[in-house]
Image 1 (cartoon, rainbow, N blue to C red):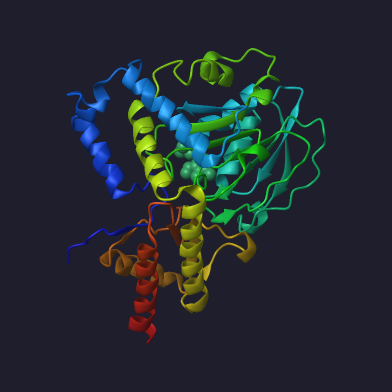
Image 2 (spheres, rainbow, N blue to C red; image 1 turned 180 degrees about the vertical axis):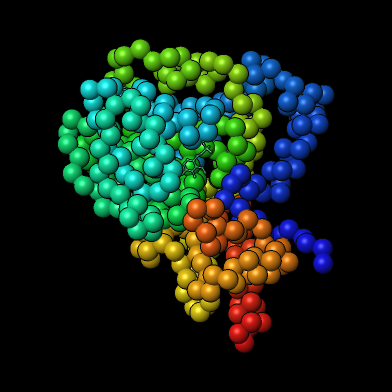
Length: 360
Ligand code: PLP
């Protein structure tokens, strides 16, 4: 049987709408009738400067970024932010508070320890990160508090954020642009682009100027947020193509009603899939109900021996990317913006067919 890929539930890289992929492909051949490929143009050309300006404008508009925040397009993925944040805002004699709510948060803690002291003010490691932990006391002399809004591997999500009286820093790699989150609550937000924004290769950072003004120690140029801000993210060669495709994708998001509108569809997609996981006697959800993510839905089968069989059954029906992360096991269906409700309906039908075929 020929496998036809129709429904991509992969956790990353990005799933892009077909219209965006077409525009992106055209720009590789002949960008905007210039006779040049987008891959060949200088990042210092006025035409690309216009792309940078438009992309920043779209980010500001879609996320309602306040005026006094810098919008930066960096490289090195979200993982580079794990060390760049403490390099800028944490010194040896200081401590920072971290929430240990998943593998990526855990990795950020490891990196912060190279620069200063880390106070883990909440951890759900003991329950395999099945929930977002309670946040313990954070003293006022803490340099900042760091959390992850959506735990991509474990399928949990934060639906409210604390005001602890210290700068709030958040890794929003997997739920940025998927739901309305007031940026003004945060002092720094970062996200690898490759979920809801664009192709891998670009990292978005939104940072309050006031936080940048607190940095008094020397920071190497390529790690210094102020240098990127003062050079409009062009201190060195930016990831031109990733930024261009992100611009196309954000234009698509705007044309489709923006973040508030896509959030409604994302809520409907997650509700449909969780309802089936709860109804179907073969499956169960991995995250605690009140913390389960609308973006990455993680589930398992009661009969572990059947999981490979279900994966093949689903693949034959055009589902890809539903295998769980290697350390988490089970299944993970990622419901990013470009994945439509029809795909979730198809996965639900597939789970029901499997139930009927094997146990009907
Ligand atoms: N943080 C979160 C929440 C993620 O989901 C990921 C990757 O999926 C990362 C950090 C690491 O991102 P990158 O691969 O861009 O370094």
